[in-house]
Length: 124
Image (tube, rainbow, N blue to C red):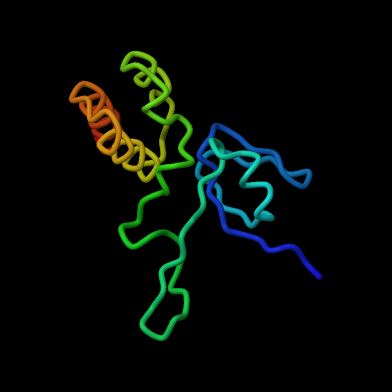
């Protein structure tokens, strides 16, 4: 009997699994126990469900990453540390998830401004 798996996105800088190297933003299937061991590095990709109960694709209804498994998670960092950590983040979905996590936790204007600034750099 095979072990249940779950679809995840790498939220950390990199992740090694089954002799393969994955980087931030990569998606893969892993056993559920692996997600439990790497909560800050792997974010579960929620499946959209259509009216018939079938999956319509990866991502939650808003297209954002789950905020619980973020790396970096803004609640663990002061604003200068957050700015340093997001400076090399190129994944817009990850940045939006980090911003949402900030809103749900400390809701610091300076932190949200730093995330917006990084998003603007990527869009420009």
